[in-house]
Length: 206
Image 1 (cartoon, one colour):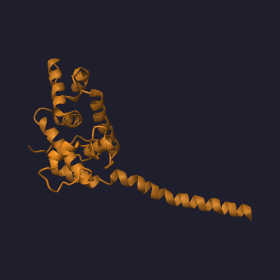
Image 2: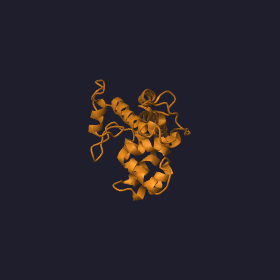
Image 3: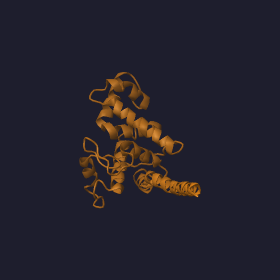
C-alpha cells in the first residue's frame, strides 16, 4: 500500500508540474511581446507605414532587455535607456508624455529620438546602411559618427557605408567604438532572431 501511495504521489507531482509548464511558458512569453503594440504604434507614427517596427524592439532588447525599470550607471532609464535630459527635451512640448519610466512614453520618446538621428543621414546615406548610422548616433551621439565619417573621408573611403565606418573606428578620437559597434551588431542579431530581416522602407519626413 505504501508503495502504491508513493507512486500516486509521484504521479500527482508530475501532473502538477506538467500543468505548470504552459503557465511558465506563458509567463516567459509575456515580457517579450508585452510592449509590441507600443513599438508598432510609434514606429508607424514616426517612421511611416511599412517601416520595420521590430528594429526598435531589437533595440529595446539591446538597451534594457525590455525592462521598464532598467537604469544604467550613467543614469539612462527605461526600456530605451534614455537620459533624463534627452527625455525632457523630447517630452517638454508633449504633455501626454508623463514619467520617463512609463513604458509607453519611454518607447515613444526613444523611437522619436531614433527618427531625429535617422533624419541627419537621410540625404547622404543609402537606406540599407542608414539604420546603422541611426543606432550608432543613438548610442555614441551624432557628433561621434560625424567625426568617424570625417576620418573615413580623410582615408579616401566612402563615408556613407557602415563597413567603412567600422574600419576607421579605432582611429576616431574620443569614441568608445567597441561599445557602439557591439551595440549595433547586437541590435542586428536581435532583429534576425525576431524574424527574417528585411530592409526597412524609408517613409520619414523632415
